[in-house]
Image (cartoon, rainbow, N blue to C red):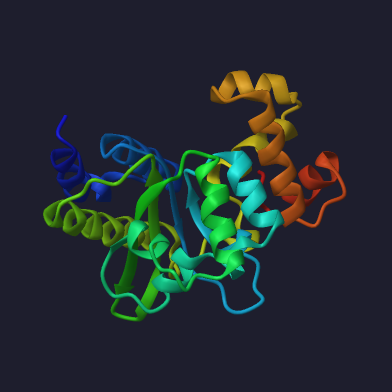
Length: 239
């Protein structure tokens, strides 16, 4: 299907989605239709704030997300830096061609290429209450015309708006900010499933299941998976 058709259909029907995971699946399909392999919908953290609490929906490869968080790349990411002041979408290539980029900024861009993210488009999202977040698509290359970029701008606004409606209070997710997939894995772990069993249920690799569970444990300040499940019950995340 033509990517523009997919994007316009997204805008027309996104309000029918009832879960954050549903929005994530729709964004993943849209991303692939435009030739992108990754996406991320997030807020931009204040200085010193970790990025993992700002990720609203992630379609990043787990290995890349792990590296990005472990190395605190958000402090040096030139895409995020430009997004702070941008009002319209921009291509990654408009940033990577800047000869004044620092060595740390170039390191982020070069490392992203190792995960297939050579180019992309970043969509700043603004609403009635001002700046709300960014939607980033990345992949091998970004060959977008002005109309396609404008439609992706609409996609970002509509996706963020629907997510706000589902959360009931701004763009922030529920407390502790577990992603839908992290919470899903944690719930299956609470049901006694092993990482391998979870991987089969969710059609992901065992490594990815382990990564989601480890990420959930880190966000819940848990020492291990069992502790994370206990925290999930205590906080009402698992019922």
